[in-house]
Length: 146
Image 1 (tube, rainbow, N blue to C red):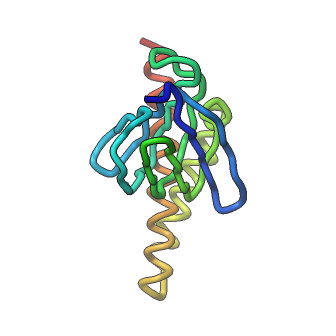
Image 2 (image 1 turned 45 degrees about the vertical axis):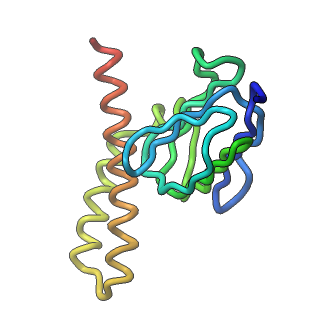
Image 3 (image 1 turned 60 degrees about the vertical axis):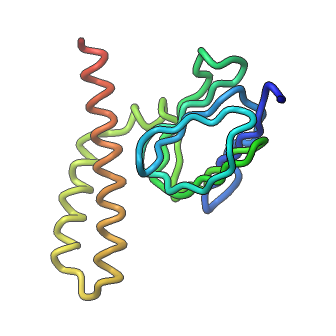
């Protein structure tokens, strides 16, 4: 069995990551799941959360990436995540929380004013993503304060 698998993270705009890794942990709809070389094939819905990338070994996280949801395809040699939105965790943690709170408030108003189910669902998806970002920032700040 190989000691690395190929990890790819793709957003609608571009290929964000393509590298061999020891392991990757993805926030699946049913919980976190780790992918090692030789993993059984599967396709999974990805929920908003953090992808932990273990570059050189299975004990040290080399990169953390926030994803807003999407899908993951896993094979025995590859893990490909198709993300609706993705950003490095460090960049996200520098986000203006007041701006995110304002965006959440505006989205809630827009949902109330939505004139179609399609528009409402799109706004609700944006609301869930923005709330996940704000919750993540708050949890990281709480962890640092403890």
